[in-house]
Image (cartoon, rainbow, N blue to C red; front, top):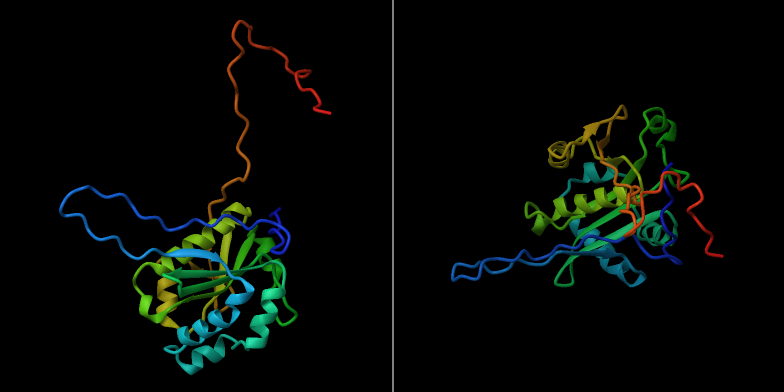
Length: 228
């Protein structure tokens, strides 16, 4: 069973992998380092900035697609920040927001028409990707791939074996992008999912060498002692 995510108000967040500069050769042909892409959890002070970013990111999407993807009000966006079980991630370059992702660990909301039993019958433990937006000026530069890598990482550390997201049927660019990354259509018309390889949080048992001068212990059933 998947472990529930930490409470954002009382516990530490899931570690987020950061983009790091790769060391290069010390020669005259060394290329200049590219921009550094970072990711962090959204804070209350980010709400207005992220909302403005989302409006920009939808500018180039046609009105029919936006309508199909259930438009969201700013009031609802503020309410989501207060809900538990939802991660909101901000991706930045030089303090400028270039991408945003929002994911949840279970079906949330009374207006949600997802049927959890669909996934239970197929042994799917999904991380639901509610939003994934990249600034139009950064399309094709690897930002979206880094966002998706981050979502895979979150799913793995929480023992979830699938990413599930919703895409408008007429958003051909997005559909093509996800299909290239192993997403496939589910029975529902506009949902797509891709498998995730799980990484256990705890390391497996490890055999240690016997202490110097001691023979290997045949039966260690009494070896453990209480620290109390």
